[in-house]
Image: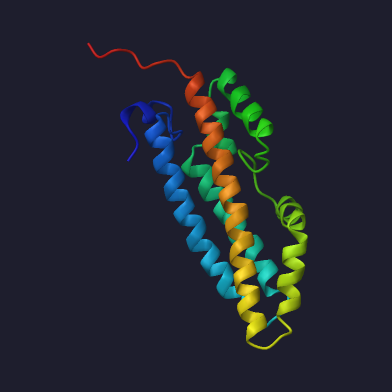
Length: 172
């Protein structure tokens, strides 16, 4: 549960502890989704894993953005100076999915950057049993890597924003 200070700013975690807590919850979510992606990758049906990975990753990105208060709608509710900081921080750290509406095309670009691993994952499906196991392992690793990168990008944007926010008014 986020502190009262964090709720002043909506869903954006403010304190270092709040950011750390949200980061860890999101990393757990990434691991769960990566396990599901691995399960689908193990199926010996070429192409099904790509469709599944794209839809699961789109949902994951939305969930992580929401957890950090960094959906486009949440960022639009920020003060103009904070919006600018959020977008500058996202661009500066390479968080191209932070505060964005995730499209299939955008995710295809992200997954294409991981092309060699994806190609290896697809190729292994043609080797009975061992190929499925290898495809599952590669699928898990790729999904987890991309998910963790997005979580870290969101945590870094939240840290940048927390440094820009004024201290809460003292209690009377």
